[in-house]
Amino acid sequence: MTNPFSDHPHAVGETYLGHMGQASRIGFQMIGGGLACLVHAILPFAFVTTGSAVILGLAETCGQRRRLMARATPEATVQAAPSAQG
Image (cartoon, rainbow, N blue to C red):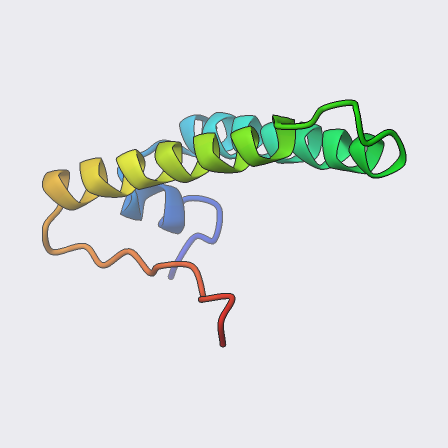
């Protein structure tokens, strides 16, 4: 029987709590970047580069984690995020 709380974290080499921390950190960064974009929409002089900086930082963080996971467990397959182009 599979455990939905531990299957994915273990598949990516993390404990449940470690995965929760990492996913929460990324989620809060996304929320912060999104809020900065919403403020920027109303006040175009505010947070001019914050949204794109958050996106680039998250892309780098996630890319590094994928590379580390691939080296640690070459047999593991990590699905890439779906392309926005279709």
